[in-house]
Amino acid sequence: MNTDAFRSSISPASYQRAAQEDRCGPRTRLAIPAQLRASGGRGFRTFVQDLSISGFSAAAINRMHEGQLCWLTLPGLQSMQAQVVWWQDCTVGCAFTELLSPIVHDDIVARYRGDEA
Image (cartoon, rainbow, N blue to C red; front, side, top):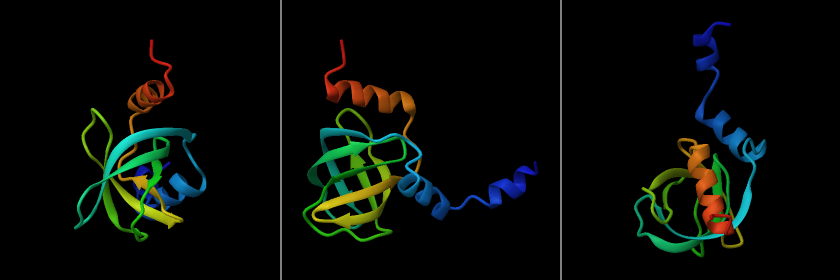
């Protein structure tokens, strides 16, 4: 397979579609206290409601717009850039700009599910 042709067929839009429509990573329902900041705005406290390696949904009282960049900060981690895919009824769904490491994902899930020993 020609890898250049393969790479050129992958676009941010195809990534977002895979992240949100195909749900390429299993979503885990959680309640994680976090900080969310929209591009050009102030950060605000939120709760991440579900998490996968490709994205998350979180509470967002103020309307966020499709395509808007934002940064999610989870306890003990650096801010992660994401893009708003949808907003409805004070909940925002976002796709991470870079996939979350499965190891980091599993650690977060274990911590907030109470699986940690």
